Amino acid sequence: MSLRIATFNVENLMNRFDFSGFRNELRQDRSLQLYDIRTKEEYRQLEQARAIAHTDDTRQLTALAIADAAADILCLQEVDNLDALKAFEYGYLFKMVGRGYIHKYMTDGNDGRGIDVAVMMREETRDGQPIEFRKMTSHAHLTYADLGLFSDAIAETNQESDRIFKRDCLEIDVKVGGRPLTLYVVHFKSMGSPRNGMDGRTATMPVRSAEAMAVRRIIENRFGKEKTAGKRWVICGDMNDYKERVIISGDRFNGYGFEPVVEETSAIDVFTGDGFAENPVTRRPEMDRWTLFHTRGPQERHLCQLDYLLLSPSLAERNASRVPEIVRAGQPFRTIFPEGQAAERYPRTGWDRPKASDHCPVAMTLDMV
Image (cartoon, rainbow, N blue to C red; front, side):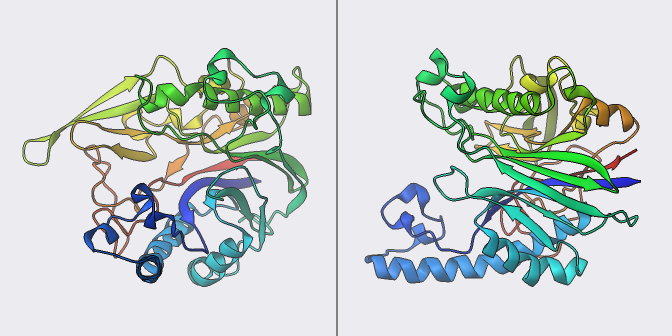
């Protein structure tokens, strides 16, 4: 008996327009910056037209990536609300996979833009085993004080009474063919821009590490420290951090170079440093573990893994021969692939957009014995 699970940051699956760019150029789409827009009403009309024009191609590509992930349970990040998720599933995904993801679960988290984590699941696995929803628990309310995770590094940007999770840690209990499984769906603090003499990743590392420690504490409190390793659980989501990356040099005229680098510290260490959980993507070759292409121009380009399915030791041991898949056909053409990895892009994929997402789905088939 097996279950296929996937995680995917679908990048701003919204059912509302964002008009904040009229007064904040950082929030304004680059296509609108080409025009002399004089009034708020004019801006609103143009933004609505732009968003609608871009959305149809984008969501067809998103649906294609999800269809290729072929998951029984799909963990998502950057979803506006259930109405947006239902509209996407009915209008796009249904046309590709048919009557599939009937059950959808999410709740409001802490993100200022209103993008939350969500779960969609089939009624049964592909081999016919029932998937039974048991319980959903949000941990968005937890503060640093609640779990004793406030520190001097956190105090640089947060108060002790602030909420730990920048979105949520959504805990979902299911039974698959009668066997229990618990999912922890997360979307950690983004890296942001350089500040206070530090690069964005370093500056925000304490916040992400605290989020990771909070997830670990939640799991240990749930199952008991001594029993945690033997339970079936998966931490799924966009953790906005990497343990390793592939630095890209060169250009398309002279050829590209790719150099794998291991980072000294990472928020992911909280989970994998002492074997608390396993990152099965490391079973792939080191040049082929990435889920996102990052660039700030030719001087700063790399490939890295931001999207994770972290397995409990028990699940990892039971699935020691299984290797996760990374769906990259929805990446834009600006993404630079190492030799031998280039994917055949979906129809109508653009140089930068439309695209399925800036992230790639990660999917894995798990034996639930």
